[in-house]
Image (cartoon, rainbow, N blue to C red; front, top):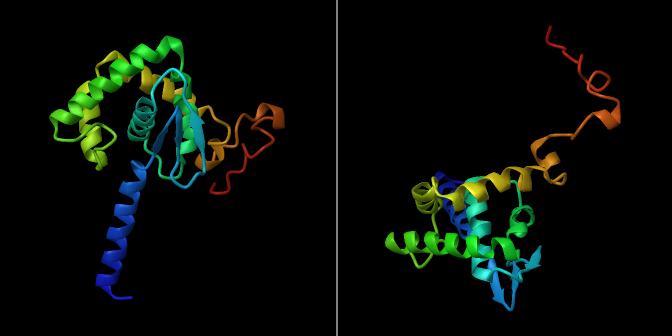
Length: 173
């Protein structure tokens, strides 16, 4: 493999990742899915566009390449409620207005992460941003299915505690 071939592959990988970051498909009729059909969800109180924007926003606030969109979907699904619908609609409208001012069709259509992050930085003091960011801390990281991805085994009490499970396994002393 030559150096130029490696450069082409790297570029393709980069473009594939950038494309997949915005590849959430809003199918209409309250249905949103991944393009590879690995997950799907329905929405009832927010629009498909609003949920797709929340998903992309979640990915941009807490970016983890190893975590699939389905975990982010679980984390933001709680905003599909009557009580959150107005906040989500106004927040997404604000994001889309900022994206349009920056030359994009809307927030989700901004292809590059750095462009979306710049938009998020503009609103990081807003209640909408702080609410979504705060909700993601527990909504994303409290999912037990995510813990092994980060190497966290979970609480230790039910397994005998940390003292009996490697607390004294220091082999470098």
